Image 1 (spheres, rainbow, N blue to C red):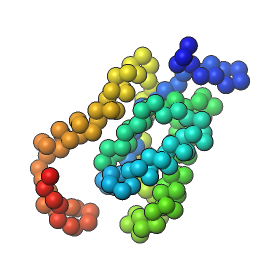
Image 2: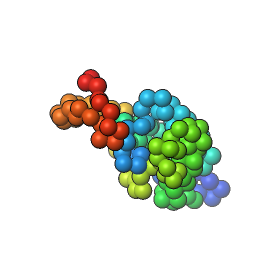
Image 3: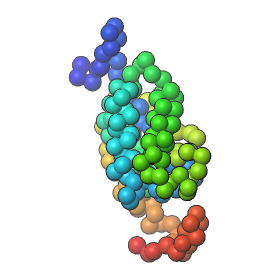
Length: 156
């Protein structure tokens, strides 16, 4: 019963694994913006009554395990989250407006999957996503110049 939530006449347990990315999968989430973007997403989820069970900001995408009340559809919530967070990110970090014009910070789509009894495995996957991404990066070739900025990349 502790996993169940309730509204006036409804008991519900709706958990979703959601993945979404910045436009062109630019690796902007890390660095000085990760903490700020995380706070914006937490605030917006709280306003809609969405509970974040697990979340992780990878360099070029975000994983979230959330409980969304049944009165809100997943696509409705994602439209709200991505739209409002874009505006808030650009208001907080005005210099990004010039890099990513038109106030479009996130790419158009998202991935959503329902979570049943495998909640713990998905939470573990989200927690370990950074380590898996790092191991995958070790297999890729080093690009000397960043294709988006034209600046020389540093070797890790």
